[in-house]
Amino acid sequence: MPFLTAAVIVVGVLCVLDLLLTVAVIRRLREHGTRLAALDALGPPIGPTFLPAGSAVPEFSGRTVDGEPVSRATLGDGPGAIAFLRPDCQPCRDRVPDLRSFAAALPGGRARVLVVVTADGDAAGGMGDDLREVAQVVSGPSAAAIVAAFEVSGFPTFYAFEAGEIRAAGADPRHLAVLVRPEERPRASGRATTPSTRSAGT
Image (cartoon, rainbow, N blue to C red; front, side, top):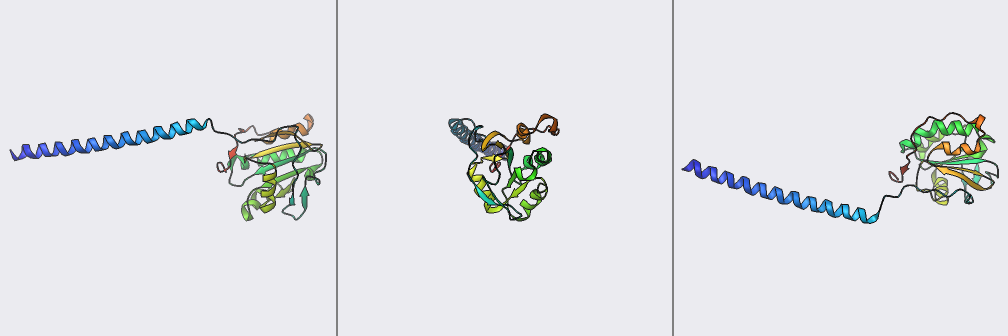
């Protein structure tokens, strides 16, 4: 008899625990359902946006890491390119070789290419050093001001411009090819063009 009583008690405890666990799972599923419904109400996620082709290049000013003044005026009216990068963005790092190739082939050389690196100190220096031979590099407060002027919402972002107007924009330096004659265009690496959002996306 004592064994039967103990067995009944054990079964009862197990049933109670099972009931509590079931209630907890149901509550958690309801919470997830509520969160998913809230996300659906917000609509699909919005990716990075770019200034449209044909729009004027925004006014901006700042100094490069070498202390050179840079602005909309210093870039002139010839073909040029602007790249926005972050050292902690893997797609940005992946695109540096292609960016170097296109910058080297761009008519006008280094003076026609601006690279804006949104980081300070060593982080910016590491990425900037890879590009200083072929581009003017901006970081720190000047970079933040230029990012704001172009309303950059994701990284990497590339702009091709000419005669004061944006010719093309995108998340891959191959968008800059509109500025280079076909026979001058280097081969790109063929990597995917998915950008990193701010934060992620940053």
